[in-house]
Image (tube, rainbow, N blue to C red; front, side, top):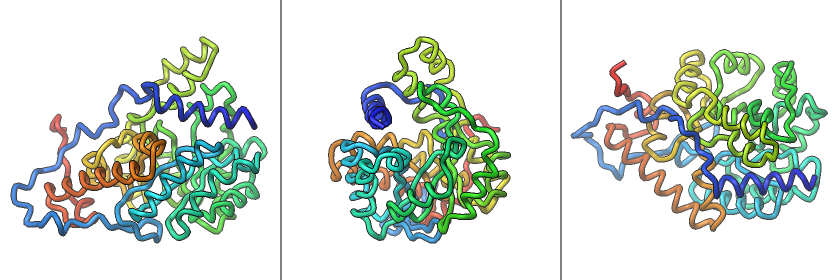
Length: 343
C-alpha cells in the first residue's frame, strides 16, 4: 500500500511540474458559434443553472476525479470540495481503491462529504479491478464511505498498459459492470481517463444500465505521458512516447456518442481549458463539462485559488453564451456551430 500512496503523490508531482498535455487538439478550435452582434440579452440575465441526474447545479460543471489516498491529496480534496460547495457545483473523487485496501487513506476521501454534506458527490473505482478480486461489496463500501450520489467506473486500458504496476486484463467486463450497476442504489456512471469513448461502447454500456458517460477524450492530459515519466524501464518510456497522443478527440467522441444516444446524459472532458471550450462542448451535445488538471495547481494552494479559477471559468462560459444569444444552458444546447473548414 505504500507503493500505491507513493504513486498517488508521484501523479500529483508530475502533473504539476511536467508537460503532460497532449500535443494533439481536443477539437474545440475547429468549431465556432455564429456571433450575435445584437443578442437581445442583458449579460446579467444569462443563467448557468442546470440539472444533472436530478441534482440542481449553479453551473454545468463537475470538478472531476483527481486524487485521494495521502495527506497531501486530502488537502487538495478539501480545497476542491470547499470551492464546489461555495459555488454550487458537483465533484467526483479520485480512485478509491487505495481507501479500500488501507483504511488510513479514508480521511482523504471522506473530507469531501464532511465539507459538503449536501452537494453532489460521485465516487470512483476502476473497471479492471472487477477482474482482480473487486466486486459489489467494494463498490458499496466506496459509496458508503463518502455517501456518494453516484459511482464512476473508470476505463483506462492505455494507462494500465504503460503503468509499471498496471492491471491489464480487461476481458469480459461488460457483464460485470452490469452486475454492479444493478446492485448499486445510486447511478453508475462510466468514464475514460483521456482517450475517449467510442459510440459502440457507449451503447453497450447503456445496455448494461450505465446511467451517464463521461467521454473524457484525447486532447487534454496524457496519462500515458504521466506513467511514462514514472517508469524506469526504457521500453515503457518509449511506449509512453508512442502512445502519448492516443485516443478519440473529445469533440469527436462527444458528437459520435450523442448521435447514437440522443437522450443519455453525457459529460465532456479532455482538453476543456476555458469557458468557451465548455460552451462549445455543451452546444455539441454535452449535459455537463468536467475538469481536473486545470484545477490541480490552484487546489494545491488554497480554497480561494480554486474559487477564483472556477469563477473566471464560469464568467468565460457566461460571456460565450451572451455572444451566442443564449440566455440559458438549454438555449445554448440548441445553438448551431459551424466548422472552420466548412465541412
